[in-house]
Length: 91
Image (cartoon, rainbow, N blue to C red; front, top):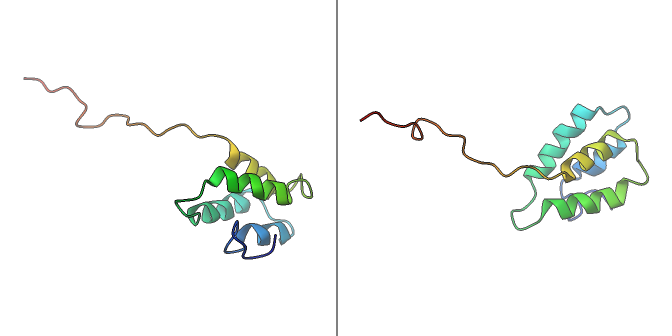
């Protein structure tokens, strides 16, 4: 993979692996920026798996590898928690 390919158009993940001493918090920020740029037609989980395939084995202890693995975990479906409209009205 090279900087600016279809998985990483801005080269964010590529550059993160090249930064010496990058922290987990910095990797999470970079990952968020990358995730927000994923087109709506793509499946982020597939792209994350491809990025891990590319970088994970060569950099198993890198904070970005850890961040990508966290990104693979499924998230709960958002659900409505109520609000002013869900309260019962006294008649």
